[in-house]
Each structure stands twice: as structure tokens, then as C-alpha cells.
Amino acid sequence: MPVTALISAKSSGVTATALALALASKRSSLLAECDPAGGTIRAGLLGGQVNAGFGLYHLARAERTGPEALANAFASHLYHLDQAGHRKLLPGLTDPAQAAALARTWPALADVLHVMAQQAGHDVYIDAGRLAMEAGHLHPTFTPAPLLYRADMVLLVVRGTEQSLSLARHVIPSLRTALHEHGSGADSLGLLLIEEGAFRAHQVSASLATPVIAALPYAPDVAHYLTAGGRPPRGYGRSPLLRHARTATEQIEAAASRRQLQKQYAPAAPQLAGILQRLNRQQPEGGGQHG
Image 1 (cartoon, rainbow, N blue to C red):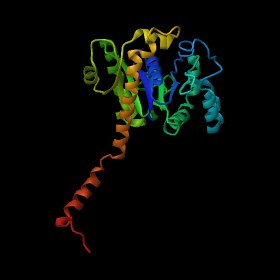
Image 2: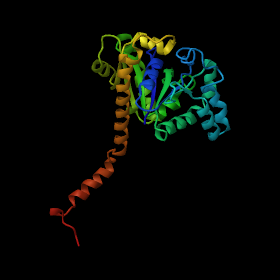
Image 3: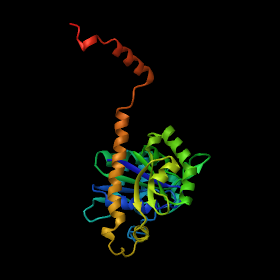
Image 4: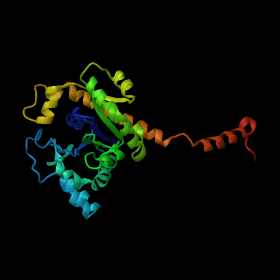
């Protein structure tokens, strides 16, 4: 199953989108709230049910002890979003000042998340928050760069508005370069469109020269509930947002699978292709075998 990192240029609804995907997935799912600016699900959707003694920050100390300690801490800091335990949440930071302590934890956490995806069969979603850049590079503290580099898919969440597209247009080249140089490849980058505004998916894709992998309807009432909590809006369980989110999870999986196949069947290097061409020219006519 894929590990998908969600990020935005500025306030495009990453947390609500990540929650919708995790809740709508047809398989077991895990949402890791890894926004260095601080998590919002603890005080929002969970209504303060989870205190500061639980969550992402406590993995930093465990990682310094070793991989086994990190794995145990990770398992003990997962919160179940449903009674059956199929929807899991790693709650985020309670204070942005904690982000610096996680700088050396991100790579080890990336390994754990891939184990959850590949061996435990979970759809894994990472809420990476707002993209922070420094001198054209991903900021080492305010963006969980190692998680983006290791992700199977990195989805920039955008809205179909001129303002959102303008902001995205400025960060995409640097993000694409970073994924090419340090990540799994520039082709891991895609868009997840929130259908607010005049621009449709094909227009957004053409404008940003980046494929729209999935789209979700603009649903402010449901999105507000997912981020702020309180009483769910009427018809929440059958809402278009959750129905389309399930389709989106399948589209994301399909895109990740295509990437994996392309890696497995990558074209031969030019010099090897030349060798194959010469060998083909030397094949005896009729395809007979020498005995």
C-alpha cells in the first residue's frame, strides 16, 4: 500500500483532506500528523480527548534509544479513530517549538511508516502541513523533508482559485527539484484538487504542469467538522466529500502502482540499448538455433 504525503503552499485544507482520505479508505489506514507548525486534530476533531503526553513528540526520545524503542513507542502512541481500530492516528505536535527535536527522527519514522504500508497493509497518509522553503530548498526544521523524500506519492493540495494556483506555481519547481535530487523522483509529485473556484482539473493540471491525481468536492461544513470537531453535520456519513475521498484513495493507489511498474520496467541505459540492437541484428534469419 502507498505512503502518501500531503502538503500545501498555504492553507489549502491539508488536514481535512488527510482525515477524509484516512476515514474513507477501504483498507486499514494510518494518518501521521507531522506538521511542524503543530497538529490541530487533537484539539479539533478529538475535542481535547488526547492530552500532550501522547503523540508524535514522544517518538524523538525513543528514536535516540534505538529502532526497537521507536517501534514500541510508535505503536503505543497511535489513537484509534474508530471502534474497530481500523483507522489510526499519530497525533501531532502540541507546540511548534518541538519541531526542532524531530529533525533526526523523521528518517526513522519514514521507515516505520513504510513498514505499516508494505507489511501491515495500511494506507498511510502524512499531514506535512504547509511547505516551508529556505533559499530554494525544503526548510530543514519547518518541513518534514525526509518524509516527503521517502513517500510513494507527494500531493500538493490546491484549490481551483487563481490565488491558490499562483502560490502553488512558485513552490512546485523547487519541490520537484528536491524530490528529484533527494527523493524517490520528481514523478512522485502530483496535485490533489479541492474543487473550489473556477478552474477545473484539466485547467489546473495544465496551469501547473503537474498531474491532478485526485479531486475532492468543496464541502466547508464537513471540512470544518473534520478540523474543528463538534457535532457532525447532517448526512456526514453519506457526504459527497467522504464518497469522493474513497474514490481518491483508489486513484492515489493506482498512481503509486504505475510509478512502481515504471521503476521495474525502466528503459535500458542508452549504451545497453545499443548492445541489444547489435545483438538483434546478429540474429540468424528464421530465428533458428545453432546446434
